[in-house]
Amino acid sequence: MPASGVSAAAIAARLSTVGLFTRVEEHDRYVTVEAEVPESLSADLWREVLEVVAEADRFGLFTTSQNGRTLWAVVRKAVPTTGEIGGPGHQR
Figure: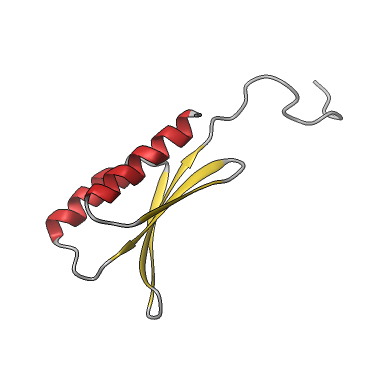
């Protein structure tokens, strides 16, 4: 498993230990972790959650009146350092 997948899995596992249900999705350039955040989350648990998602490349909180609060974190995949990065027509 690539390092991004390992990092995302670790973030998801730590959020799960706090009691949050997590979803992990792999995309072409990054892996996302999402978790529904209950209204009743204590300040101490919020601090722990923020420490966990701070390990991601980006994170945030999406809130709606209909769906509640969803915490998200993004872990970028490594950019290839060799090969045809610019595509077959790219001049070097």
